[in-house]
Length: 374
Ligand SMILES: [Zn+2]
Image (tube, rainbow, N blue to C red):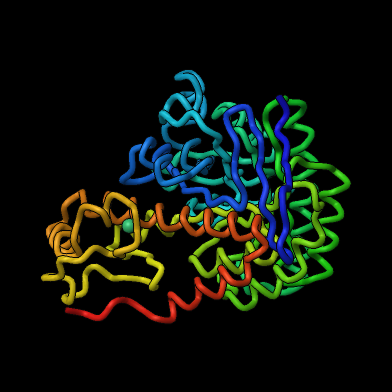
């Protein structure tokens, strides 16, 4: 079975559809929880599924260093290793090697670097990244690319984009023919419209199963990101999924879907769950604030997640202050549930042609702010 994309409905530029894979369907727009080290932190995989996630993201950089892709392959692949039998998308390692590794040297061939874990020496190249993602058994494989931090001058962005396009071609050649597995190209070009267009054209000439918009959410701010998303998705094929990497906060996600993005990933719901932050339809709740200590009400009365059905703000405040593990578990569950609820809401609204009304409602809830303290 080949991976395919059925675009079912559009509303304005927002799209809804289904990516079909041998491991199950991915409803779009889709939010992918991040399972960095073969786990979505503080969550059992079956609980991640219960929140409504159809697909997880795994990080090549982390997994190649520990426990290594070769070991995961010997143990039956990443799905079996982490007990998640649905689709997995893996990043190429390119972004994290530039942000996390110690000493590193970038050449035409790839990136030589020392591990942030134990100082050992490694090489990532398009060919090695394809090999690692194959060993992991990833369903959706990402091209190896370079992502310069913003702000950067136009020459730097242009040179980096050209390198990423040469690497995209090498990635495609190294990926070869793998029925049932998809390879996504990654558009670069920073905030330069013409460079984005050139990048998209080069990727389309190579040909991919899907296309990512890379090089955003790297410090440019929401306004600049949306300005880029006003045109960038339009450079990509209509009939292939579009993936915005590393986004984002709930309002970033909604703004991206409005502009024609189909897939996103972000550590935010799980990371915030470990630092006492909950995302709700009324905005962010900081459970560490003293106002919650005696509050018997749930985080969100209308939320159907296990945290909101069974636990009070007072309890969440207590376990956070006591450094209990269940604090991260309950807040992460709620956050992932809320992110998936946003996606479900948008999918239904796009299908029904009511995206604008849904979006107005989304912003109105946030403008109201949290319920008043008792
Ligand atoms: Zn909840």
